[in-house]
Amino acid sequence: MEADIADVVARIHDTPEQSVLAVAGAGNYALAWLLGVGGASRTVLETRVPYGYRAMTDFLGGYAPDQTVSADTAVRMARSAWLRGMSLRESDVPIIGLSCTATIATDRTKRGDHRAFVSTWDSHRVTTDTLVLEKGLRDRAGEEDVVSRLVIAALARASAVDAEINLSLSPAETLTTETDSHSDPVQRLLDGYADWVVVRPDGAAVVDAEPPAALLPGSFNPLHQGHIELAAAAKRVLANPVAFELSVVNVDKPPLEAEEIRRRVDQFQGIGTVVLTRAETFHKKAQLFPGCAFVIGWDTATRLIQPRYYDNSQTAMLTALAEMWGAGSRFLVAGRADEHGVFRTLGDIDLPSGFQPLFANLPEESFRADVSSTAIRNTR
Image (cartoon, rainbow, N blue to C red; front, side, top):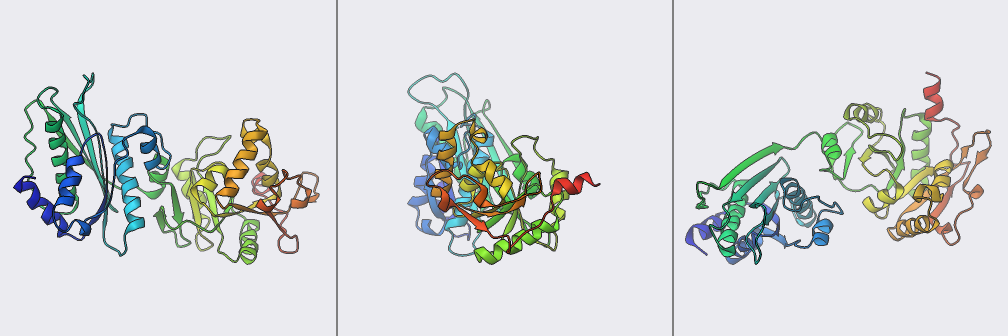
């Protein structure tokens, strides 16, 4: 390790920031340099090398990138690293998620550019460096050295360490840097840079906050007294607060626009917490919130066990139910009047054999409200 790198690393270790670093394709020297200077435990919480495509998809929380070497993938990697850091930190120290995804010289000729994308993500902003190298100028070790120096420079910048690291770029090589402040939480959700957004009763929105223990999903167009009373009844039965969940995407309709999302969220001010997701199916909701109890109506429960909502496959439906059960999901089912005005409950549903424990009945004496958002809209 050269003296200039060792000096910068030592100064990074003297800052309060802690980091999770994920590199793929290049940047490996940087990990060794960071760990090779005393004090690394003050800076590095974890390192990851998601080299294979499945490993990368897993690191990105199931997101499958079109290109693993791209600015978008680097940003998503940095966000995943930051979320990992937030889960690992033992105090309120600032967390940096750093990523590098690169394609450099190897044992075969590559048709495209040799390039690297390095991103850092913290609670305020995301910064991405894009480096395009001159093919044939260096061997693999030489390109690895340049990219690793860029990784150290990016971490120093994110840690507010004033450092000049010479990358020794040729006139034909380019390095550009772009910084963006984190957008509005709702927009981050729509852009795919947030898994969920929690909006408190006072209107404060938090990205990827503590997962809820119980959710009452709905479109809430509009929110009505029946929703509020159902959440209160479910809270008494479950002995847990019940948040409302609004998916901004729908199986049968276009995604909600940001303005419409905010209009619906505004209904909950002073009433309750609402969780915004992109999980349009209960299968996805269960994957997003393991162990969550879902409060649903009789009509929703009937749809939940119909194969036509699983590509007309009985096997797919049963598999999804099994996976939701395995994730710790449970369904508390409230009765509702059907189209003929007959009050229907969980007892009227022919549940698949063996899956009865996945569902629980909310007795009529605990809750009944013969009102619907559709009926309210039709009277307007």
